[in-house]
Amino acid sequence: FIGDKVTKKMLAWSLERAQKAHPVLKNVHWSPGGDLLDNGEIEVGALVKNCALFPGQPVPQLVKAALAELLVMRLAAVEQGLGAPMRQSVEKEVARLGELLK
Image 1: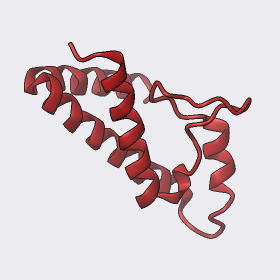
Image 2: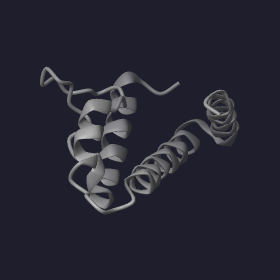
Image 3: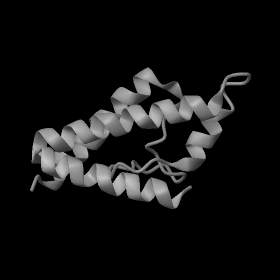
Image 4: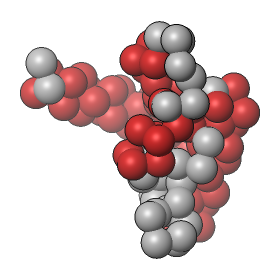
C-alpha cells in the first residue's frame, strides 16, 4: 500500500484543485478550531457557511458538482496508485453508501 505521507498529499492536492474550480469548497479543510484536516475530511460547517455566499444560485447543484469532481480526482488517484481493481472496489463502496442515503 501507499504510505500515509503520500496519501495525505493526494488528499490535499485533490481538494486544492477542486477548490480552485469550485469556490463553494473554500477552506473546508480546516476544523472549527483552526486545525488542518489532512485526512481528506471536509468540515461541513465551513461548507454550509460557504453556501451562503452564493445567493440566488442553485447551491445544491454547486455542492454536488464540487463533490463529484473531488471524488473523480480521488478515484483517479486510487487507480493510479493502487490499480483499477482497487478503484472499482472503492466505487462499489461509494455506491453502497449512496444507496443507504436514499
